[in-house]
Length: 118
Image 1 (cartoon, one colour):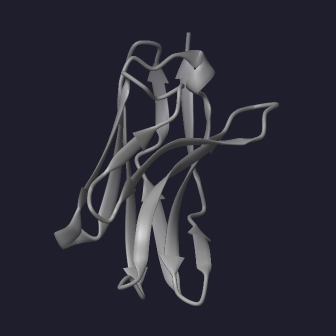
Image 2 (cartoon, one colour):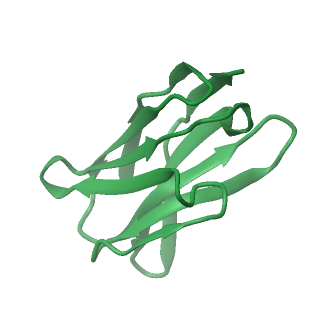
């Protein structure tokens, strides 16, 4: 099992920045990648960014040019630096980790609320 705890959400004005953190614990040996999804009001959950075990990062359109995903292996933590935030970024951000063991298992954090005021 893998446990994920997110932090760093909150209220910010448009144009501002936030940094989300996702601390992982438990069985981490077979983690292949970690990343972030978000669910904005009235929309389904969408991928934001991911980072693989070899530090290859991937960004979806809403994040390109504004968000940066990084990891601190010593702390088993993944970060999402979000810049130039707009009201459209408001939503619940979920951290995930994918494990390769007898197939792929996906673990989710509890979510952290990000609210951007205009």
